[in-house]
Length: 463
Image 1 (cartoon, one colour):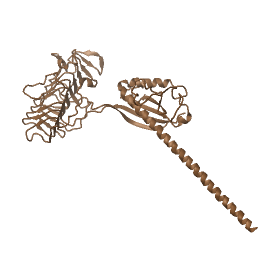
Image 2 (cartoon, one colour; image 1 turned 60 degrees about the vertical axis):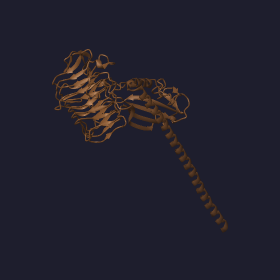
Image 3 (cartoon, one colour; image 1 turned 90 degrees about the vertical axis):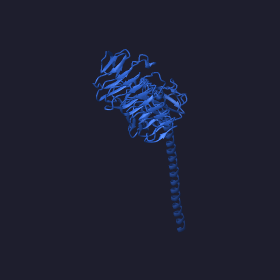
């Protein structure tokens, strides 16, 4: 009997051990299954996010192709399509299935707030205006909009995303996006698209007192350039006339388009070719006869011949934009003090007075559609950037604290031509141009792009 009791006790112990082992095995299997499910869930979520990101990139590409001029129409389409939602369902019962990156720019391919099937996933995109304080959600006034994309895990079948599980696992991407323009920041005091002569006692100075020329450079007389000289062609200069290094055969300088019509929107006043002024700021429906804001119309040209500083940005039209050399042109012969002005002219600009000028708009003082000539007094500095679509000529004793650019496009206007100077682009006399860098302008430098200002992803998890 004692022996049987020992066998019974051993059997009980063995059964307990076996139950424990089976329990461990079941727990292991359960844990493994759970981990596998979690791993699968993580992978699926990552793939859904990748699908959302791909769709977001395509929507961003679509916005870029449309351009901000059409963003208001896109906002309206988005709002109208949102109104057509089926009650109780966030998404309209229509799926486009032929969306690929290669055909995405087709203007009839994309519809805001509609379901789009892409690689077995379905996504929907919504465009709304950010709070730009104009009280009109369909009017984008700051080139900044809100783009939302929701992607559902695939594969998805049917024509409507109604599966609650799919809804719970959908990925939401929210972003503020802006149509961004890279702006031009000069790295030299003088930048020209052709050959240039620096002569007389002219000086190019400052920590960024470089000269860049897409052509030849000749330095003559007592002229001095404090920093480096870069030229795609040859550099001819007396010993000691270049403070930095000469770099002949250098790569071409990047010059932004000096196009008055491109930047006309920056002007608040229009000096019209009919001899009247349009005030875009306060009374865009009326034309004002000169003299107006210091401007007079004399000899068929616009003339500023006063000592009064009437600040603002002025745009001077040409009678025939295709032939701006015919005028009207712009002449500044007065000497206003502390004049904050931006002059954008389709014809040439001639500054012969002694104004103390500084830019009214984003460091740009003068844009000439053809030639630019400055021959003022050194006693009064000209601050900012002075640019010409064709050629420039600085003579006399002007003092410029800033940058000058000559795009050197085909010569239509021979205003600055001089048979005594070999080059059409010239800086001479006692001109002093000083540039210390850090100037950002409204000239566009490169292609526009969509910039993401804020980005957030999350589980959508909507009923």
